[in-house]
Length: 150
Image 1 (cartoon, one colour):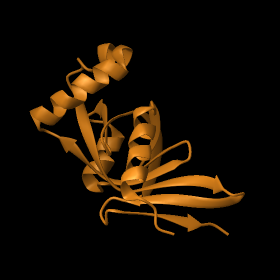
Image 2 (cartoon, one colour; image 1 turned 60 degrees about the horizontal axis):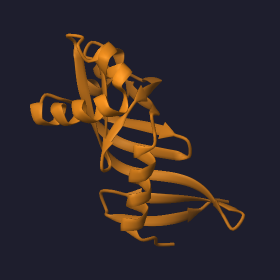
Image 3 (tube, helix red, strand yellow; image 1 turned 45 degrees about the horizontal axis):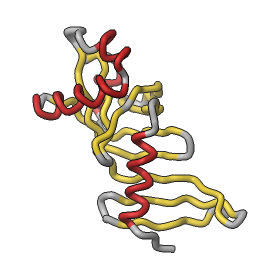
């Protein structure tokens, strides 16, 4: 069943804005790891800060395909470590407003980097009319649809 792309996109953005932590899953060399990350968003783009020498950055460098999850939302995305000062400043402004304590504690560390996650697909699990389903926002195809689960 097709859904209105703009409506579902607005719901996803609102959900991201209200989300503090997401589970980030990364993988390289057949090793999958997951951890909680404090995230901010710019529309559909998800960003977080971490140590540039962390295992997650090593895995993202080797394999940029990642997954994020929070509540009933799952995200497939492509991640990259940002070296763009404009992107980094946009992140800092939003991160400082959303997480002032984390900003003070971590942002001054010399090896901190910003990771930009460009989404491919959002899936939001729902019960509608007593039936399980998933609302999907396919960013690459600019489409939105509902999958009924059996």
